[in-house]
Length: 87
Image (tube, rainbow, N blue to C red; front, side, top):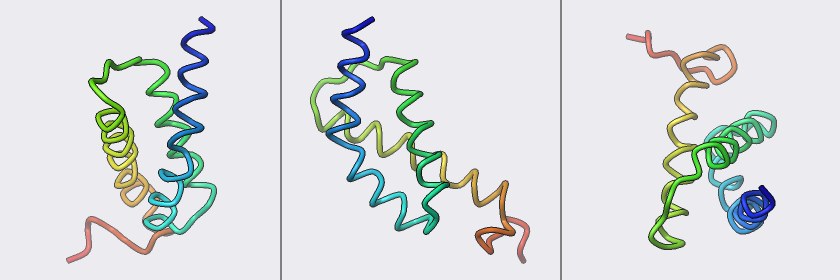
């Protein structure tokens, strides 16, 4: 179990700053950004995907969190001023 935790700590240390900046630019909300990143790293920890390179891992993390962002726009349109129902 320690090896899995060590890898998670390494990934968080290596990518959290970059992912935070990208996510915050989109959401403009610190708490939502932290929630999205927490869910992304939790998914990484649970699924334990296999990667061919560091670039593959980085791409997976970016894609995973980018799939979570539209859910916030759909579930919380009063916060973000966006609705999928606008004509």
